[in-house]
Length: 262
Image (cartoon, rainbow, N blue to C red; front, side, top):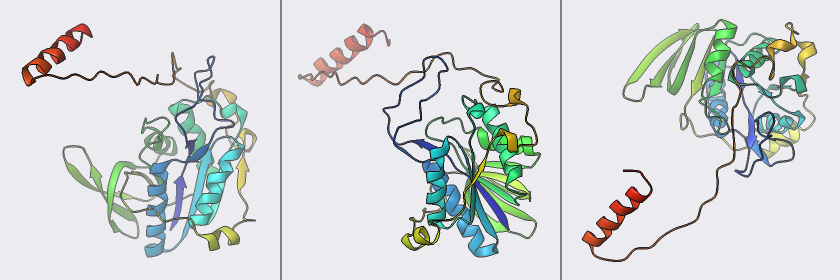
């Protein structure tokens, strides 16, 4: 089985600057890491490969330094990897991002199964995976919490639907997004690090795509624009009150009224 896992490099710190003009995060020069949810997606792919055989490929979109998470994936056991990197991809919303990655998927071959993490820690939209599937014209299931069965032409999964649990069977090729704790991610291997230190990482830009229309990518291809984005203000102010339970209850009520919460 050919499995493709979509991964992303996200800021490894909460101290991130925002471009005042475009409203997007400034990713250059900051500490980065692999999106935590993608570690669960990778481990799911490895577990399926161990049972069904085949290959695990990884794909990411980002600046050139995003190659670091491809190397990390190699150290965990990925067989092949690619990076979609072009300044024309910058500033993309979830729609343009999904379209760009769907074009990249075609560059990586025709996977039987695409696995994504549920969401990313820098966006939290949980929309890119399903939108990719729509662009690729394949069925998809989100919030997968367990792989129930692997058949020759389909996969049976259990989904977390907040108030209910749903079991679905979908035929290949398909896409799933997995929730955290579906499996415990393995650690990178030093032996695999040495073995993969010269392993090729494919680099793709707009000129490599079949669709080279710049209006479909980046800010040009984004259906939504950020009106305002800003880092949260750090507020360490606090008050310590002493008194009886009745006095403290009155203080709480008065404070809530003062803050106009009630």
